[in-house]
Length: 321
Image (cartoon, rainbow, N blue to C red; front, side, top):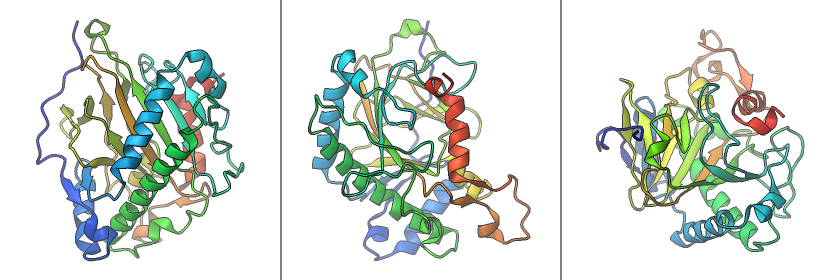
């Protein structure tokens, strides 16, 4: 039996974009144009100059690994809640109905205010669950969340500029975002599990934008326009971002939400730090806001919150229970 195979990474397929001129205001339009071009292509982008301190990334990684290496009885104290917060054990996610369950396990948290409070006005938002046995986890996790969320805001400004819109177009309703973050752990995957077993199976991301910090292990694979799978290895000093289904829908599929998967054939444990950016739940995802009221969009308008509830119900077994 074999692992699912992928072609070697080609540096002309997934571009590396320095977003420093967007962040510091020295040339935001040029960065916006580069982000736009990449998003109308494969929809995956390496970014450098992101501004998240190395120390914040390392603290988040150390905390995450300490959590995942803990006894399951301890992790079960923050078992996934009905509001999608906490520990999702291995086997709790399946990206397609006919697929095997993913090998990954995750710890999920989301936006909270400076007092640690979270609005409970939506089915996918509620109190974050912080483990008592790791008292420093909240601080390191929220520091990473805030840094990655800031990156997402800059990127959304860039996408708006690339589309010829006012730079705050995608950020007009982000006072209480549905954004969530996750530490995602992939155990070593044995070759004898076969080519149909994945750390996370082929899927597109549900929301607006994903910001991913890989470790040095590798395993991410992206599907190109010909249906071939290619490696998207870690590049030191970069994050990798990709268009989600809602941003593709918002742009009437001018931007591409591309299938991807993880195969951890390294023989080592693998860890990803993930930020899924989404605006307030009532935000209307309507391509006519970009192209004009007379535009005939490929899909009907929907709210961010309604769409995510529908997609989560299909992907996570605990929501079917």
